[in-house]
Amino acid sequence: MFFSCIEAKKETHVDNALEVVSSEKKPALIHSIDSFKLSINFKKTGNYSILKNNLLSKRTMFKSLYNSHPKKALDSASHFIYDQLVNHIVPHWYGTKWDFNGHTNIPNEGDIACGYFVSTTLKHLGFNLNRYKMAQQAGLIEAQVLQPKIELQQFSNLSFEDLKQKLNKIYGDGIYFVGLDNHVGYLLIKDKELYFLHSSYYDDKVMIELAETSPCFSSNYYVFAEINTNKDLIRKWILNERLATPNSQ
Image (cartoon, rainbow, N blue to C red; front, top):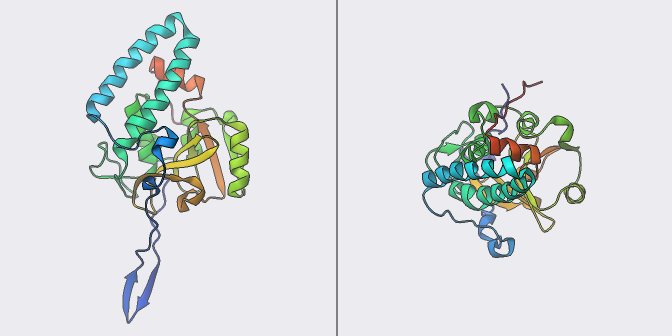
């Protein structure tokens, strides 16, 4: 079985015969990113259960629109899914504790591993998927839950600047799934800047930070799947179609 998070790695050294665990960590960058400039929300609002229920009722509206005006429904649902995930669902999860085996279904109660953070928030957004099965896969398999393998973008052994340049040529503003060597999360592209939303094994919590300065974003391998810009995925959300988890290779 493959997991998409790695065990936390903290430097240790022996000082006067006592083992000392280094506590040096950079501050969470959520506090230094300008949410107003990004036009996104960092603070949770409202009741989470009510939020999830409202999402389901909204999907009924989109399904009705899809039956008569499919293109209009897909375009509208694309914006809706972006807004609900980035500005409403994820903010409730900021600060939730990370743990390699964490799989809480309730934000800020218990722990959440990186794969479960992605699968659980997508589940709560209304995607019809098995959050356990998805979370227990390697990043490439998780990406294929959202988009066919042939449509994924995969990169190896690139500097951050080269990766950023390639992504900005391929993608526009939006929210994407990203799988790394031993980690997964969401990539937010906004005005050509890259932001990483994830359950961090470095800072031990769910957070948003600049991808460029995130220790967890450093990787030899990257795989990206579209979310709100993925018309087929949006259609599946509207129609409540099951998202299958491919067999791991």
